Length: 285
Image (tube, rainbow, N blue to C red; front, side):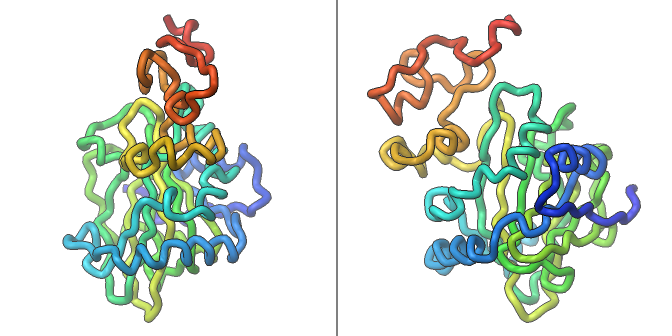
């Protein structure tokens, strides 16, 4: 097992190279004060009514005293302004550097209420049927919508565990808390052993949990059902591609007659047709 080393922390002014090095070495990193408090407050306010209607968990893994609210990219215009935050882009572009496409996989506002115990330690990549993957296919982010402390249930991780075998079941006390102030963001790999912390405080710990995946795996959330073409036609093109309106590899994700899926959003535009439309795809044939 790994030692209980601390989660690395970088300043908001950190470089792309520093983020990449932390992810390579420890599999996780906190970027302090990456967004202003006002952004976190706006996201919380925009999702509040939906959170009030969301269900609490029904299992130890979900958390009996944990409430999860999805569809955040649709429901929170403010979140959309930071969906492609420079720290997230730096992480994804580094980890997925050999892929033709990557993007958002799921969004979830997670509220851990007082009395909630620690979540079983796991890897997010286990959603792919516990396959022992040879490369990284996930990069996750957790925005601190409120302060994250050890007492209120800060996410817990095993730094360096992205290099461990896939069949481990680490204990809670083998993890360390990713304590961070409101507006900070935790980045970690899908192979990182981690879990939600136990909330032993009298306050609710709120985080915006995001998963990002390489383009050739299935997205965890059905964005294209939640955000159909009529909804996203006025959104920024890069964000629209980021949620799934893009091709990957040489011929994955085509629309209609081998068209770019953006043609469904903007039929008035002249997008290229054909399977091999990804830049550089011919080099792999």
